[in-house]
Amino acid sequence: MPFRQARNTDLTKSIEISSQPNSIDRLLLPDNLNDTPWEKHRRFADRVQLHYAGSKFERYAERIALCSQLLEFDLKAADGDAMRLQLRSTRFCRVRHCPVCQWRRSLKWKAKAYQVLPKVIEQYPTHRWLFMTLTRKNIHITELRDTLTEMNKSFKRMVGRKLFPAIGWLKATEVTRGKYETAHPHFHCLLMVPASYFSHGYIKQSEWVELWRDCLRLDYNPVIDIRAVKKDLNPSVLIPELLKYCTKESDMVADREWFLELTQQLHNMRAISTGGVLKEYLRELDSDPIESVETEGDKAGEERRQLLFGWQQSNNKYKIVS
Ligand SMILES: [Zn+2]
Image (cartoon, rainbow, N blue to C red; front, side):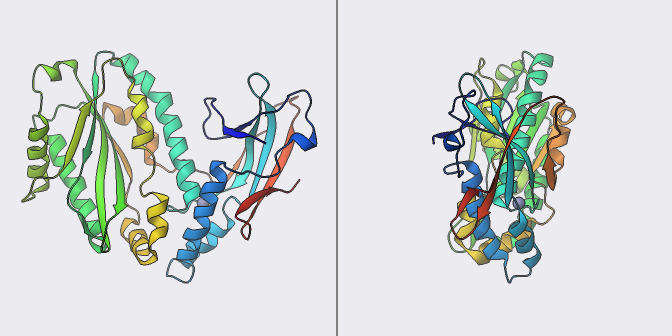
């Protein structure tokens, strides 16, 4: 049974399946969730759970073990002949580095940003957008917390500089794994600048490097990537890159000691921050959008057909339960 991600606007809930809406036959329904994001992320969750088991984060292992074990979907008609599975109810653990919850969080943040950015553009139609990545050299994983605190302070310093051109920004922290127990912390930023920036007060790439170096008080030139979003391009296209994850799943599962230290170092550190005029619009990104139990209410008079999938750890699969 072919599966594909839904293209509808509610990115967080649907899986589209090809089927005839008027001839729902049990045999046509999927009996597993092969190749769906649910399965992929739940597999990684099992590995993260194993990393936490027996460590000082044992309680996280226990919580992840209960995360998204049963997925209850409603089967609904979609556009054309397609049917889609819409999540009706499941339980999430909300552990920061749980791959399933991290994925859901990112989807919800994205949905929020997609919903809000058009309003910002409407309000500031002539403003332009810059996409910037601020980095520094790798540090030992045990220095991550102090380094990120310092980087956050430096970012504030930069925002406070007179020549800083943005009137609004969104900043997301990403940490990747480096060689020899190192970590590579960096910021992905979306900056909103007045159209006049390109004629007055324009900052060249080399000047951004100097500015970041100065604010971060480094004795070397840090790597910075900065590009202007084309005039006719909606900045929403950058949202997936910005709000994808803090640490990718393959890095989380690669080295247990590194990952446990990462968990320790990032405890209560914020991954996303907003400032300037974007703060108003994107305030909700500051909080965790996931509920531990998510359930959709019934709509009056709506007929629904339910499908329940259970996670089978031994098979690495979701299988239909009823
Ligand atoms: Zn979870």
